[in-house]
Image (cartoon, rainbow, N blue to C red; front, top):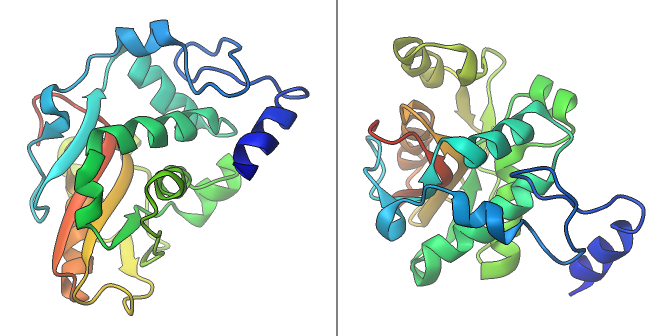
Length: 218
């Protein structure tokens, strides 16, 4: 409730915007109904999980307005996308969220956080946590070698992902069911690399949830 009041107050100075079209929307809205209707939703909200994940929830395909919103989030200083993604992902995961003990966001590199002003997956995870009550655990961090996946080819992404992440704190992981959170899944290399670290730390199970999924790719 406090967050909603604060958000509404700030919108007087900084108008609330739809992440899909960048148009101004109401203070308590997250996106335009028209934009939401135009998205290419994934039937049943589930996609083929990458290696190491028990299941993968996904809202829509990575195209059109969904792609524009993801790129705005990745380009930085555009938190509207993260809030909208968190809302929609919570709806897609639905009651399945009760089966998980913690949300673990895929970490961003220190350099990208400085450039953007935030870590996208963490921002999304905290919105999901606010709505579901499932806590966020910062279990992973990005290594100094991490390079952004969007600049790499498929084979390069897999190699880069294997050295991009390290276990930061595994004390709240052992024996727990973990839901990995990220904005997009393309090759699945990032989610697989993160899931491997969590399983090695003793996680009982690792699932995943993303806003967009490149259709036709695992």
